[in-house]
View (cartoon, rainbow, N blue to C red):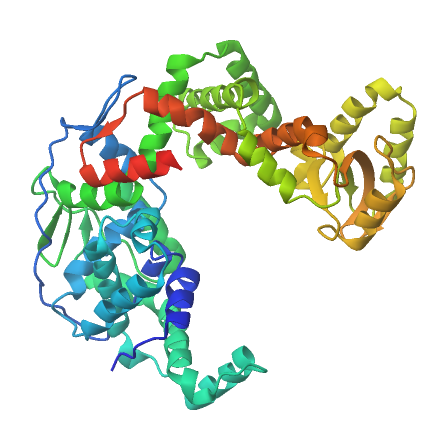
Length: 507
């Protein structure tokens, strides 16, 4: 009998272990030890007209068919498609206690703050769509319930590992531990069992993109199960068939657009907005392509294909979009509110800002050589040279930003690093001997400091630092594009997606 989980373990299982319900839940599903399944009730019919608009805007429109062609290319589209397949395979063929997912939903509604907003953020159109996902997960577990044994010894050992030194009593969490261990075992067993089950039910996939994605899935998750040959397609709108039940383009489109509709539209919409408002010299794009071609030589075409580019034209389009986004982030003004800057100032303690060059612990001599190069240049040329050397030699992720680490308070870096920056260097100075930490050897350049100055004294520095942080994290792009999206007057024909679009664009 399925056990009711405590909220602690529900959150751990659903949000942590299973990757927010999507994708990984396909791997926490389960197989079945029966050889045959009878056909269960077909999915609800969903109408689809490819010529109807998915979105409209004053910079361009997108039809349902155009949206569908993008959606099925999404890396996780195959998992959402398999939800539909497993709905047909499992509903009506396995018994579960439907009160369990219903009770879980009610408990979440009571204890998850701002539940309605949480649903939107997790791309659930409604409580009903979340409930169906919870029910499907229970059905997948039911298919392997008789194949998995969790022993008392395993439960006791896990209790000692997870709750040693805590106030929990064994009897309080025993059932929860069982559920966790069962889910882990199901996760390892389910891919092959489910794949075998789908093949026995004669799963036929007619869409080329989904067929290829499922083939790749089988190679990774269930290499022992062979892909079925493509069967004859009976109707143009039938995307797949399992157990004699058709899965139509309307059903797949509804499922994919609910999960990824905003994501693909944001990308395409931003593409249209960028091209409508900015331009990049095509020669700059061709120069980048030539650099890649020179770098990879004879392997260029193969690497291009492996990266998912069908042609050089596709690579051109991607690089052009990248350069347009850089123009937006680097050249468009960012307006940081005074209230936000004052909040930042209020949260400040003693802070420093610095850049560094990190080299591996085996390359002390390289650090010494780089220091010599830095010592040999004029002060006016120093910042530019430091950034160039960091970009070329540093192993840290900050290399792309010229070694810039931004600002931080004491205690946020390793002790050896903090000691040098806070206690030894003055602003504008750098270390003339390599500083060793557990990460390797550092050359550290102190670029700024703050120790409780009045807001007016540090306002401009705070603003510059916040703008740079936003540009590095991608927040700047969203801030700049938000009013442009509003000006584009984007409208989804699906009211649920429109509501979610307005919610996310308002953040």
